[in-house]
Image 1 (tube, rainbow, N blue to C red):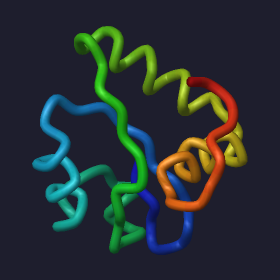
Image 2: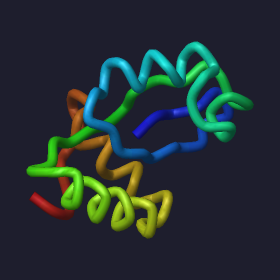
Image 3: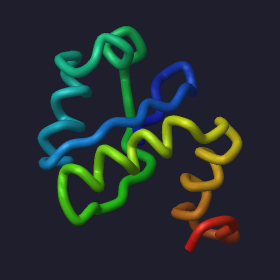
Length: 85
């Protein structure tokens, strides 16, 4: 999940996270992020395979913004993790 300059969150799936984040950062990623540079990686998770990754991406995209922020907060120091484990 990327946080864009305007504070919005972008969710996608890739098999090469570092390359994809760099691509978005250069303005060569999705049109959504291209218009909202710079972007920062704020959350990621590994998946067993492409099918599982795409199902998880779809599930995350259905979450409310508040729930997405809970995922991000789980990685930030000094915060308590809530929700799925």
